[in-house]
Length: 331
Length: 162
Image 1 (spheres, rainbow over the protein chains, first blue to last red):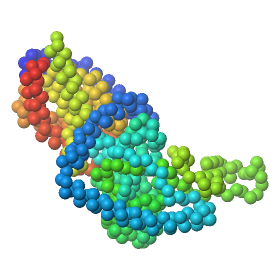
Image 2 (image 1 turned 180 degrees about the horizontal axis):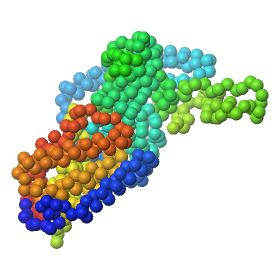
Image 3 (image 1 turned 120 degrees about the vertical axis):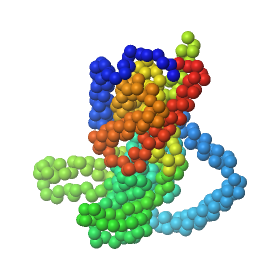
Image 4 (image 1 turned 180 degrees about the vertical axis):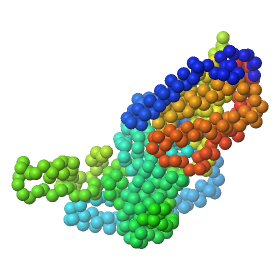
């Protein structure tokens, strides 16, 4: 260590100029934070600087990718053979199930056409790879390698082979950020498979669980119940597995039962995910009935204002042919 | 002249490496124990070169970069690194000549202070409070500090950089 003495760093007292500078920078940081919090500038800025930011992500994910490649390259031959065998069996089983389902699905489709509903069992998905970048501990975010150029939009659901992973929250040109279902700020409308009870699964504050904080006291919820997406709210399509109830107890408020659930998706070691492109059929409340009384021009004011927010409602009246690769835009 | 340039690039290189290390994922179990590399490297340079290199402005810009990369809240890390750099520079003359264990304790205190700041910022931004294990990171960083300090110092000596 060079022992040069600098007069700029006195032994005890600092200078007032240094403190002033600190205050200046702190104020600037706070202004930035408030502006960003209010307007969400950060993502616009990131989108603009994506040409710098994205290569850095790819660079930072190299160690994880290298580790993955090495684990494959040095894997035991026997292990690989075993894995191959297992996958083959799984595929056989899945194919057998699919073949049985095909007939049923077709029948279902016909019946649904008769009923004039437009739920479809088809999936429009895009395969995405997870970029191995750390977005901070307890942030419940992952990065995928598809972005605006691949047609990804904010709000699209993301699933893996076992269940719902989360949804897209931010999009860069070639990558996108996915908020996991375990994030405390995330909520999914779910239905309990066994009983059909509808409730909402939130992420939980500590760790890798889901919380269902407001299950009615009298509800029939057991350990081991499967949670599926209910399709309400119109963001997640209906019928994807979300989790499995691991324990149920009275909530701290005493008004409700609180259940905890393990997410079905393999959130910890998810490698490849599917981004869903067909958005859920909007299963909200039906559009208000046309007032049968006076003509619309003379209708009372409240009726017309009630009808106004449901402007995209004609979706319900269109014939069922509307499948959604182009998608109804959703905010 | 070229040595001076080399030492400048060494300085920049360590900071960029710290930014990258911040993004490199650890195995999932160790996620919570990830040290705050950027703060450690910035602290090293603040103690080593003082105001010649590490100024509040540099800390601010570095923090903005880090915010851009992690995408949390623009200005959050800028604020934290500014406070860190300010305290480190203010007490630099004393911190430098502390024995290593005392220096480590000082670093620990700085980093815990940093976590408190982060907690306050997050509370204002309306995020939920993190679990208890979240506080483990400063301790891991403090344990790593002597090794990082000795490593960087040794490399600097070997390369005869300033």
